[in-house]
Image 1 (cartoon, rainbow, N blue to C red):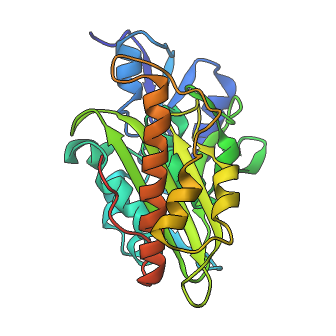
Image 2: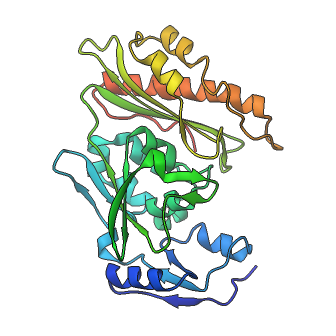
Length: 300
């Protein structure tokens, strides 16, 4: 299906882009366009003006922050995340997740900002960003504000962005010492959307024997990436062993109501959430012990 007629503009500066977005309720930003163009083709939504922000320098690049974290421009592509030496040095798992998104053509064009702003529950990057305590940096004509990733995703295709606002960058803080991240995903097929995802981050004690802090984030069991606070409470202070992790993850997603569809029931997804969470936590522990901040992404 072809796109409906739409005006296309390519602003030369971030200020110009923000001015257009502020003055036209029918304007929408266009970065990689991997999802937006399909949404428009299928008449799920419509816009009057596409504001191409893909070439704006203010939205590009990956830089190291003063505290050792990362500042990632909203228009950084999945491929750039995958290939970034800065990302691989300090936030390995973020690069690994990006490396497993769809195919190379999509990774060449799709952007981290677009992946987050679409707020599709099946998307890869939101759960790992929540697990890493990322902060979304927003700009509008009237100013700036920061929103924690855990509060940015509001529901199906809904975010904390207000009219006229644009996600300009994502700040990922430095991980604590002796920390690692993990990510596990269950998909119907190699190229299919995931049924359940889990991301984790753990911090170990000096002897690498005890979990002192954790994040367990589930996706596709709720409308948005969701931290399982009860699982985190069981992990914190527990031995960093297979048996302890299995026991702590046995109650993951209890009380949640995942969707039922042709690929699986709500109960099946709930049970698989426990498995994916355990795998993600195990990866994170192995990464922390190995002095590496992430490990294999474990699937699409």
